[in-house]
Amino acid sequence: MSRLPYKIRYGISQLIAGIVYLPLARLALLFDKAGFNVRNIPLSAYRNLSFYTMRTDSLDRFGTRLEQRFTRIEIENMMKKSGLEKIEFSSDLPYWCAVGYRAHGG
Image 1 (cartoon, rainbow, N blue to C red):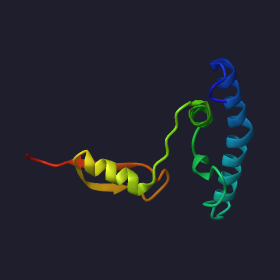
Image 2 (tube, rainbow, N blue to C red; image 1 turned 90 degrees about the vertical axis):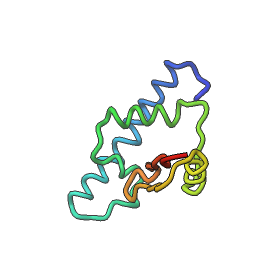
Image 3 (cartoon, one colour; image 1 turned 30 degrees about the horizontal axis):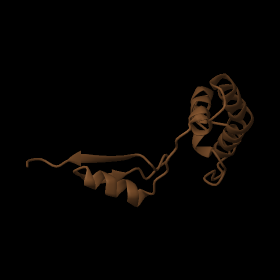
C-alpha cells in the first residue's frame, strides 16, 4: 500500500481508520466504562483518543514506505551509544516512549 499514489494511500488509510481502528477503540471504551479489563482488545490504547489521531496513525502505519521496529533492548542500546543515561521507558501505553538524559561533563 505504501507504494500507491498518495491520494489512494490516504483514502485507504482513512477507510482502515474508520472500519478497523474506530470500532475496536470504541468497543474497548464501552467495555472499559463497564469495568472490564480491555488490555487484550486490539487497539484499546486508542479508546480515549480522537478519530483524528486514529486517522493519522493509520496513515503513518500503512502509508509509510520505510518503517523500522526496534525492541526495548535495541532502543536502550542506541540511547546509551548516543551518550544518554538514566534511561526510563513508559510503563503504560505507548510502551515505546522513553526518556534519557545526556551525561554531564566530558
